[in-house]
Figure 1 (cartoon, rainbow, N blue to C red):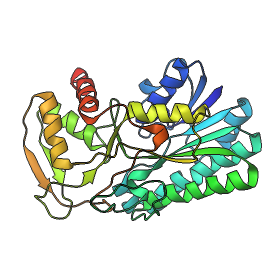
Figure 2: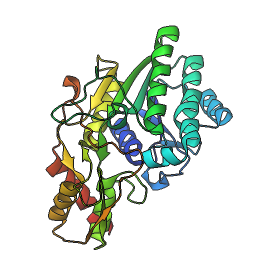
Figure 3: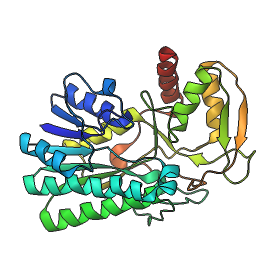
Figure 4: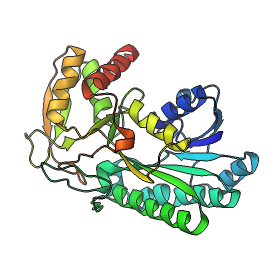
Length: 309
């Protein structure tokens, strides 16, 4: 198949592009390099430096290539940025994504896979429970709102135009190539700073000094397998969680990364970040059970950051 991977110079998208090429598919990568890195794009992929908000540039690309499928990873991914800049968040996550969707409809693209968020869409997940796909969404950040809005468009296009789509709701994804310089991606931030002997900060769940928010961290390799299977039509459900069902606090995560690196560093206490959920955990879908546990995933991740340093 010829597959378009948006955000293919970024963390998750570049891993997806690698896996698709290894599986014998042809790949075109779209990325505006606002957060992605050109060196992440596989040499065997065709690269198009396009912002998905640029409808005319996307149209030229779709006119030049007969795509069999689209894997849409490009997004504004920071909850805190979305809280500060909700219009920009919607321009990228809704309008930019709609540019792609309209072209898929016009060009009769066979399949559309969307990277959504389970970590934000479900809202607060009560202690002792996990959110599954039947959990009623309860977004509290503009980022979650924009992702959920586009899920609605996909359902409408499936109903009205027959566009086959799969929605993958990610937990907190981590692994090699994650950007340690943004506001999202605490595993990458901690791994990079601890590797360099720099202090780290625990953002509070409620008050500075607590153990921080509770999260479900899923390794990028498991996320990649979910995308490849969806693109190849191997999944039956249309909406699937991609998570582990296992939780850890931010402070315990920091300790785990320190242990994997064999270091100890200053840990500072920060305030709660706007838009942050206190507890988020996903029930893994039976079709996408995780293969990499946190200990192994952290070991792989810190090794990558150590080698770069």
